Image (spheres, rainbow, N blue to C red):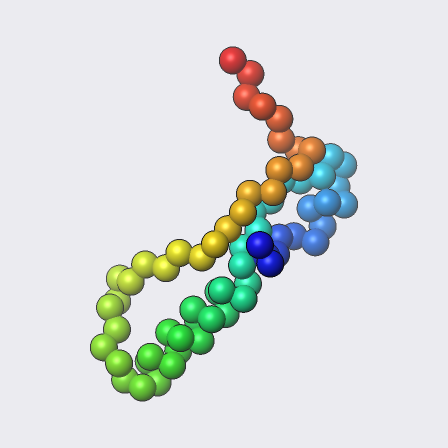
Length: 66
């Protein structure tokens, strides 16, 4: 995924786990929503939006003990 998470997460000791999100997808959705409003389209107020995300496991996580 062409995503983004904190640039500093890998620099910590241990490296910090993070969530990466798809910035391009977020921008496309925001642009589409803005254009809908500018055109005066009927907009569903409680519309949900799902943006692709990825959990990046790094040294700050470990398996849960049983």
